[in-house]
Amino acid sequence: MTTTDIPELPRDDGMTTQEHAYYRLRNAIMLGALRPGTALTIRGLAQQLDLSPTPIREAVRRLSSENAIEVLGNRRLKIPDMTLGRFEELVQLRIALELHAAERAFPYLSEIVIEHLRALDDRMDGAIAARDLDALTRMNQEFHKILYRLNPYQAVMPLIESLWLQLGPFQRQVIETVKMVDVVDRHKEMLAAMGTRDVIALCAAIESDIRDGSVTAGRLLLRKAGDARPF
Amino acid sequence: MTTTDIPELPRDDGMTTQEHAYYRLRNAIMLGALRPGTALTIRGLAQQLDLSPTPIREAVRRLSSENAIEVLGNRRLKIPDMTLGRFEELVQLRIALELHAAERAFPYLSEIVIEHLRALDDRMDGAIAARDLDALTRMNQEFHKILYRLNPYQAVMPLIESLWLQLGPFQRQVIETVKMVDVVDRHKEMLAAMGTRDVIALCAAIESDIRDGSVTAGRLLLRKAGDARPF
DNA sequence: CCCTGCAAAATGTGATATCATTTTCGAGGA
DNA sequence: TCCTCGAAAATGATATCACATTTTGCAGGG
Image 1 (tube, rainbow over the protein chains, first blue to last red):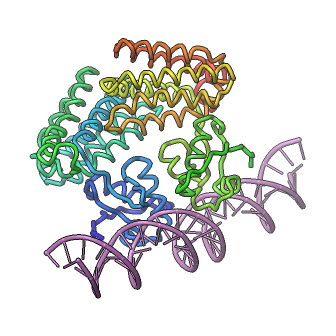
Image 2 (image 1 turned 60 degrees about the vertical axis):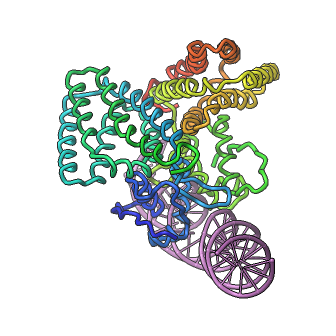
Image 3 (image 1 turned 90 degrees about the vertical axis):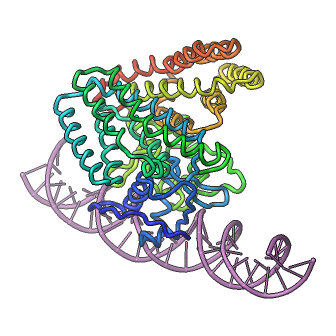
């Protein structure tokens, strides 16, 4: 068994063991701590997180339902492989869903929220200066999430997060390759569009934001072996 | 405990107990056998399905990750309530996702597939004549699924199915109220559009198909108590 | 008739044990 | 050196059990 480190995560009071395991695994996947193709075992994870297999299996099943973990026929688990075709599919889906979410959140935009997002963006500049990839990823997602969740009738966020979860394992390798400067510029564009209440410009900025990370990613996947061979 | 009947479902060979429980519950929810607001208990379900609580818990967790079952803070489970706001949100999401899926599946359309869909549509006419709601629902979903899954890089189907799952408990009441004639007409429109390879018309037909079921549904929800009170 | 409080029953959770499969790995042969 | 095969180890699945918490139902008081 490869001893992939699952980052620790504080356990809130009243939190179920299974819940804790779920969020810890989820966090690890989102941040790219588990690479595509990584094989997992329930007992191995149980040992790593120092829990019994039962809550681990439940956490794993939840993640498998979100397509973050693949359950193979022979009852073994792995982080899904990334292929060029799947990657493009996921990116297109992100665009479709996140633009939809932004449009429906737009009427709920307030000056207070925009100010909040501005502050978050400033902190992201700090994370960039500090080369803190994990914090940057987390805040980037938080930025989008705050916007999308303005719409009080929430059904879209879980779907978007499933996509983030599926892209997570691969994202790490992308970010490590890139200079990571573009991301934040797009957020500045998004903020400007929000300031002038320009929904078209906002959507355009979001689409660019999503695409930015994808260009080099696609190049990475192509450099490997087209579509057949997993990454 | 209300003894809500969970419809039986054949258990394929090599199928895990947990998997069987998952599909059986999923099927029950999709077909609307469990109404919104229904309270569930793990032990109760275990007794009903004649299993131990362990595989039930895993199945329930999977469904909770797909937002088909709500896990309340006090550790109790229920089928989520339906409100007008949530319903409209889910319908809008269906439209956004299914049009996206149809567009991306379109290039893979072949005459054989269209013929297959035509045959399925004929069988749906039979189900309508026989007033078999369950079969109709199943075949209706199958119809859409066959189309969307033509695109070989599948990531969208699980998201769409999560939406179907969330609409399922409410759908039953809608269908029981309506004369159920429109649905199939839309499928004929879809088939016509496929025949002439007209993607615009196909998308329009799909959108109408999705909306059709929603009009009366929205009216049902309004007749109740606006948005605050659950259905 | 309605509210309050308390004891009994029921529930979710998580650890453990057992069983059937699957994987691992090294010995022996080509 | 490479392949085959079989035994040992590891693994996933599931039932069961113990425990803490919650719900339920009823008795007693207002």
